[in-house]
Image (tube, rainbow, N blue to C red; front, top):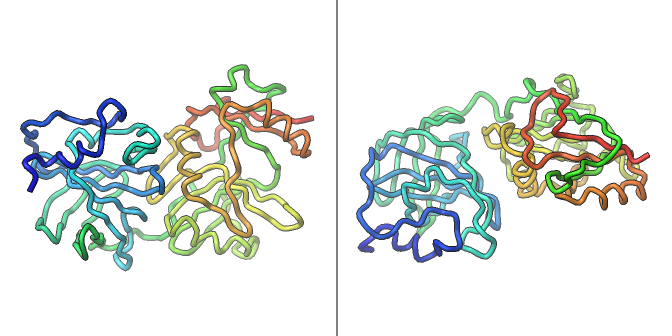
Length: 331
């Protein structure tokens, strides 16, 4: 065993190159062994990191598909190096090329109670702001573990969306004067639709919050199995492309039981890009940070009705006509 539980952690990080906490060797802090954090990690592949405070460090597992909500489904959990206690509050951008390079965001944090802790099995009850539940992590081989939910699942595999209404842009004649503060998208027109996915199902809502009849868009039924089975609430427009309907997705409002409304537009778009939603009748729209003039030029050439300018730091304000989002017609 290492003389210092954080030796492996320090060996993979250069304190001068990463914003992550890299404490100097020494005595470990004394806590109550009751803090947990789940971090959404935009590394080479999107995954979630579960960390449990234990003996002065955070015992850590990387979970590619997120915390399972249904006890019928176990998820892979790869045991990683112990992290410092300070990591429980860390959010930031780890530089590209560094170990774990990418955006790190706190998905949930709270307290937990230990029911069992051994080298092969960890059983805890977690209570966070987004979810609560009793879970067991059990070792299968080497660093590979599985995580299993032990109590009943939430009432539905679909996240709630009936309480949401689309955020609407303000009309403007010109692009914003500070384009570096915005991300730009093509406005392709079409029908504004929110889509709740999860458990292999999809439910569509119009701009008034009304559930669309299941037969209205049968081509979107397979969308329920996209995003690696994660539960999502998506925002987009259904447009006609080459004579067929395509759901053009430009925002993600909820993910894996987490509410993303308070996150910035930039962070939501990066999460959406990691989900890699592309199918025969749906795709993620491109976005272009700071490049408004070029986007407007292409939109005019292609005959698109307008360009959308969305502030990079904008939250999602359901139902609001917000000056954070601007719609600039091409004509």
